[in-house]
Amino acid sequence: SPAARRRRGLKPLEEARTGERLVVVSLFERDRKLLEYLDGAGIRPGVRLEVVSATELRCGRRRIHLEAAAGPKVWVKAE
Image 1 (cartoon, rainbow, N blue to C red):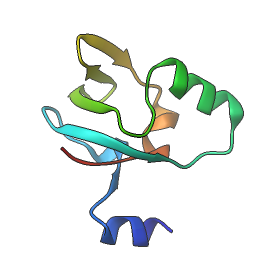
Image 2 (image 1 turned 45 degrees about the horizontal axis):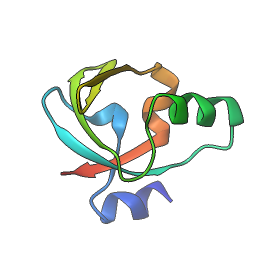
Image 3 (image 1 turned 90 degrees about the vertical axis):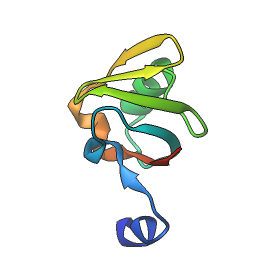
């Protein structure tokens, strides 16, 4: 449940702030199109991200523009 994830120190990506460095822990989604979008963007468990803005992430040298619908589905922890 979301409460259990928060107790473990996780938060949804949509709550991340600019400049934070995070690790993707899990994806909670059943919509195949959204999962394919996230996979195509390189967002999967274990990936390290830096928040550039509310809609933009950096993964290494790659910049990822994130759809708003994806933010609550991606759970992250501080790096």
